[in-house]
Figure (tube, rainbow, N blue to C red):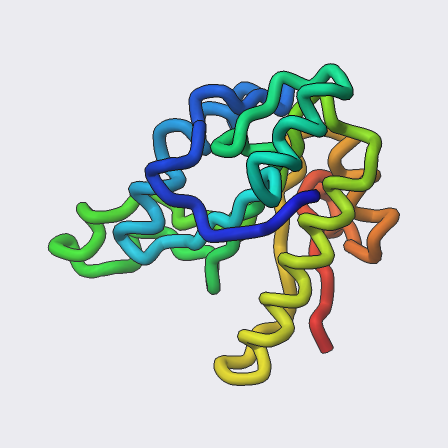
Length: 169
């Protein structure tokens, strides 16, 4: 009933709400820009088809075929743009993010976050076979998010419990 696909302009970014303003705003205003600039790729969980959207709606979720149920974004590194030549640095945000993940508020606690995380880890491991990567880094937005990541094998950084790492090797 759910499929994961690359974010495009046809997805309803404005209708997404995960309960964390920073993630909502990032998805609405920044995700496609980062994709266009090659900063990150955002994958969205959406109803598999019109029938799936109708099934979600019958269960009380205001969902259409273009609705985003959840998302994650991956980037290959965390870079401070101050380390880049000025001409290239002006194309990017001050910091190029590593990853983000969120599920709609009304769908949290149903396994969607686990599905998104599993797909993100799979894609990261597949990419690491070609370009090598030590692991996935996340900046959790709060303690509940940090606990979610820790339950799935992420390790908190020393002294910064909201920065977490999942080794890929």
